Image (tube, rainbow, N blue to C red; front, side):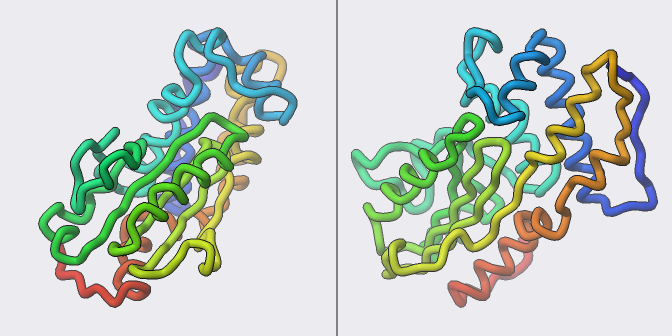
Length: 231
């Protein structure tokens, strides 16, 4: 593993933020001595296993990849496992993995907006879609925005108030870290040379820029016709 700092001062800041998250993530994989196991996962042959991580895979991905991406790269503020939010989650309808609180609670209440997300282990994003649809089907009286991720793949879903999720063209946006993760893992390999610029070139900044807080707030304002004042 290299301890050489990585800087790309003349490049897209978003790519730098994502690169930093990926390096921290792959360093954690190495610290847990899971490099070989992760190789079989990122190459598409196996699922991430908790006994290798000494932690549940979903929580590991949440703590070390998805939440850092959301906070550090995309600029969101989050509330994990929200038991109460604006508006409240339907009784008996389950609890999303996180709520986005970049829209202040009082504003969300006034505008009937629910902004939440689901996290699953790698290669199980379909399960996140199923959970998301259950939440949305339980309450059509709100505008809904959902970010779904299994760490590798990312989706943004938009559901205006009163519309069925089945009638909409979703996901609204998609992006993937698969190629970048295949490249950044060389950071843990003694037989391979780690080249940060190769990781950066694999990051689809055009796609991921649509997941940043400013971009999604613009979408909310346009799609839901909800005027926002700066906050």
